[in-house]
Image (cartoon, rainbow, N blue to C red; front, side):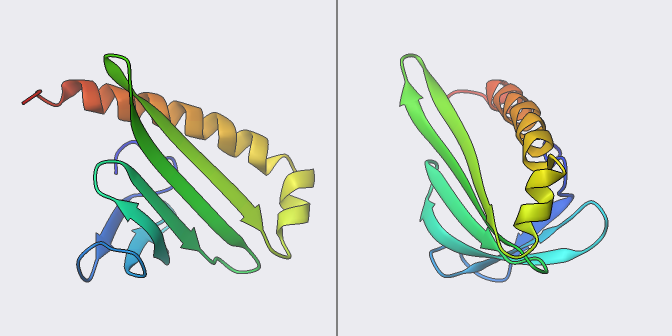
Length: 115
């Protein structure tokens, strides 16, 4: 996962599908189980992760747009630690990092040969 700011790898113990788990390793060495809430191969992935005192939902969507595609990455943060995170400006920092990640994903996609 070379495009992610806080992920060094991801693995699944089984086939990808709603209700399944993907284990994502944060760049500081901890693996987080992420439950798949929605999965549409090649189109959408929605994961929920529950780090201590937080509940995070990450949504990734790709849809055709003209001669290319539109990529959307959204996140929701709630839980006991979400208030202090907002006060500290973490969501703003995270949004900036996501914009950079989406740009890297687009660059990677541009390198994939078209069938």
